[in-house]
Amino acid sequence: MLNKRKQRILQAIIDDYISTAEPIGSRTIARKYNLGISPATIRNEMADLEFLGYIEHLHTSSGRIPSSKGYRLYVDDLLTPTMLSDSEMNLIEQWYDTKVQRLDGVFRETAKIISHLTNNISMVITPQLAESVFNYIKFVPLDDEHVIAAIMSDTGYIENKIIKMPLNTSLADFEQMAVVINEYLSGKKIHDISMGALHQMRSQIVDAAAFNKIINILEQILANEKRNRIYTEGTPQLLEQPEFHDINKVKNILMMLEEEPVLRDILYSHTSDNTGLTVTIGQENKYNTIKDCSIIRATYHLDGQPLGTIAVLGPTRMEYSKIMALLEFMNENMAQILKRYL
Image (cartoon, rainbow, N blue to C red; front, side, top):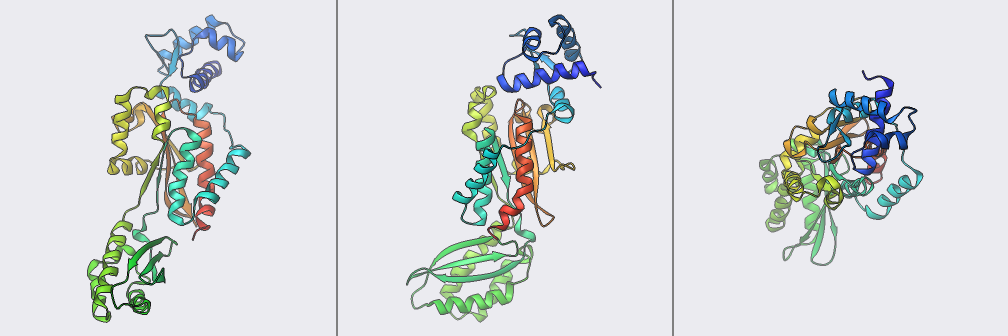
């Protein structure tokens, strides 16, 4: 363990570097942070911190910057907790009120608001519906030639598809199909619904052309919903960070974000602690592409069941306290947000 003086100096270095993105020297610390010790003493302590691996010396500067080890101690022991401001909480509330119309929009807009507030890349993974239960399909008339197929699971997720009605087919024909489909599928887990089970209903459907349209939609939807979706936002914000002015570094990160298996591994590879958050810093990350980045994750729940993960990816210089406060707020309030659209 570092003594109190070394901890205060390390905290000053990290706080300043997060704010300025510039290496910091002993004279700057003495002038800005009023630690009650001379620049010479600070310089000696910084030499010890560097020897112990908590800070690093950039050869192009006389100042020091934090290492992954230094950030880890900062996050675990030195961080000053913060809370969201009233204006930030109001912005989040208004964001959902004005931009979300249905359940799947919650996840997309969550990614957008988090990226907007953190100036980093956000990732939101939606509930995996394979374990959800098929509730019903219903058909709603749109006009004389089209109906809307609405499919709902027990989690409240809705998928809407517009269908052009075949010639000589009426809304009553679609309603009769809904009765048959619901009788077969209602109460079954999506994971257990096979394509063969869908085709077993064919003998009870009079209108083959209409049924084929519905089968194609069901097959597509059920196949999609056996996987959860990942929304990412914030590429422009990433480009604004001083650490990512190197276009090759940015390109590698953006290419990684296109690889869905990698994103799933990143989002699921760490277990949350009792605060509901995990933080991986720099060299702790599994993939070389993000060894200069940190990731903060939160798992959100509904009625006590884990549904998905919210994460922020950015430079190791990210504002940990602010981002952790935001993800804790989202983690605590996602259930209420989701229930509005169930």
